[in-house]
Image (cartoon, rainbow, N blue to C red; front, side, top):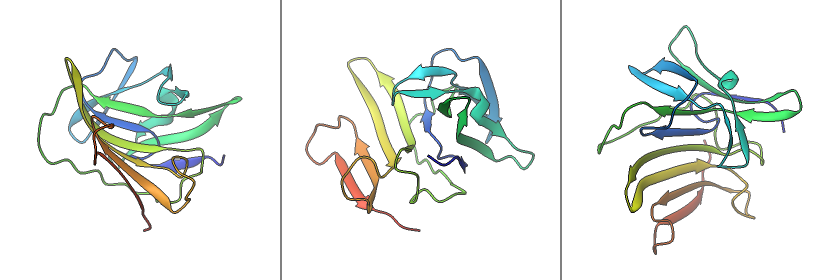
Length: 154
C-alpha cells in the first residue's frame, strides 16, 4: 500500500465524547483527542504520529508505514455536539484510495441500549465492484434501507 497524505480522510473522524487519549490537537475551534491504540475498526494501529495541524490550520490525518506496521489516524471531539448539520471538507481525493484503505467520517453518540450514528466511508474494499467506493450507513445498519453504496468520482 502506498503512503497517502490525507486531510480529514485518512481514518475515522468521530463527533463524540471518547475515552481517555494520550494526545490532543486543536482544530476548527475544538479540542480533538488523538487515538494511540490497536483495535477496531480494522484491525488497525492508530497512532498520534499520524495526526497534526499545520500552520494554516489544516488537520492532517495520515496513513503511513512506521517500521513494519501500517498506521493510521483517528480523532474524536472532546465534547458531544448534538443534533445539527455537519460538513467535512476534504483536501485530497477520497474516490481513489488504495484498496486496503478506508476513509471514514461519522457522527456518533453513545445512547444506552443503542447507538446514534451515521457513517460515510470511502473505500474499494467493501464490495467486488471497484466503482462502488462510497458507502453510507444509518444505524442500526441491519434495518431495511439503512445501507447505501454508490460510485463516487471527483
